Length: 189
Length: 214
Image 1 (cartoon, rainbow over the protein chains, first blue to last red):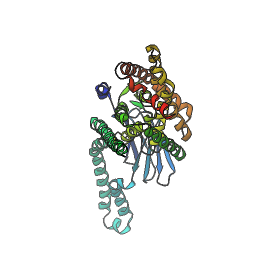
Image 2 (image 1 turned 30 degrees about the vertical axis):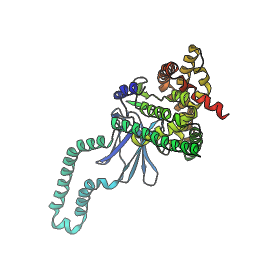
Image 3 (image 1 turned 60 degrees about the vertical axis):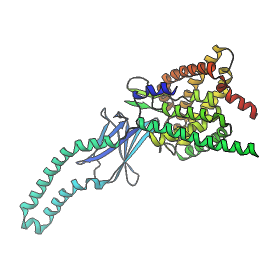
Image 4 (image 1 turned 180 degrees about the vertical axis):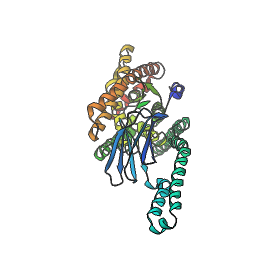
């Protein structure tokens, strides 16, 4: 029976659902997967850190769902794929510090009177350069982020399956050892 | 691709359901261990391993959807109450290694799988062991199919007690597992036919124990 089962194994295995999210500009983009494929038409909910529901929606055919959170905040993204399948992702606001900081620096520089009067061009320049670098970085980083997302979605493979069967044989050995000793002492007494 | 499974993940069920499932599972495992003597440990381990690996075998259940084999009917007919410890070990490993199911939901999942298995043993073991092979075939098919149906019903009930509507969950689970029920029925028939020829003692195991304990 086991051999027959093993012959079937390569068909497909993991069906763990996985959700991953990142800030992209002022949007939050969530990606949901089932095994190696996208999790289509699944419910995604975004909660604030105090437990309030911010928004909810369903993923599209590519397993994506995006929304505008309004303000940057720590978010808890929950994927509900039904029939007991579920995954969570904690999206920390400081993950976006790299994006938010330059713009804020530009804003504060512009709003500080002494700076604005002394070097108005520099403040403007900072803001423009910041935006351009930001956009370029995002273009470069997006594919990397995608790969990271798929890499963190680790699949269960043959290793895990054989490992599990090994564990079961080990447990069997331990159980037999204890039962055998038990029987032996009973017989001796 | 969407995949349906009957193992419930962490964080889906409410605490009373988790605790109730855990309590029933502990009782079942204790009973199963009492009835599992030295000679049956390898059988329990073998079926535990088969159940563990079966969850990775997907059966197409309609366009873009697949469900996996459960094998709890077969396990039940051969093991009886000893299906509880067998499923406990297999489900714990599935949760840890395959991220399939969860550790907090372990008790509920064990009950959902093993209770129908024990019921199948009680209902069909006599039939499977009958001298007439036709009756044995019918009994084996029903055991395989009803094991899956029972697991689907209990899973739907656990989800309904927590959040999802029972009708919706039950309909979804039954629709997805209809092909699995047929396949498991056939697998059970084949296995029972094989065991009747080669090792009929295995099939008589649970019944003999029940008699000796009664």
